[in-house]
Image (cartoon, rainbow, N blue to C red):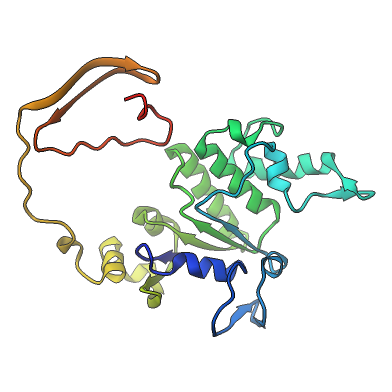
Length: 262
């Protein structure tokens, strides 16, 4: 189930309500058809609701296993059962394709791998409802494919998934239903078979996608303000680029791919 909306539409507020981080001013929340009078983080966990926030909640100095089990360590005779923790953490890591040693401090991982640890942490608790807020924003194409395949398996097992993303191609491929928020109100709740990506944009912003950008742009000058040839430094090898006058040149890539070196 996709949850869409522009920045400030109310998506994060709704996530915080479902996870117990905020209390509603009115209305009701039902879990398995039963109304919940008071939702707290503990109630949400007990109800099987797990949230992967866009801002990671990991502790850099702790290991992968310690982060995954944090707050829910298995106990034996009143002490942490590290053997059981390792077994359950490894099972969660295998689901998301993490092969790093469980003893690795999370601070030593790339941003994309940390995101996968965050997802493994949610799966460790065996949730019935999984809420994912922009889960692929820092993932590579390979990691995104791994996550997509995993979500398909979880859906087939009967887990409910709420998926928040600005990447409409992912939404159209992965989700079956969509809810759209605008200015804190629900403006659409429908099957994705009834719309396309352009229709989703119209629902989110209230106007046709063709009106979002100017139809005419000045052509950049052929003259280059800066030319770079065979440039190598840090992670970069043999980079060529031209920055022309009258042009805005975008540099794309995941965090840590050489942008700072450039």
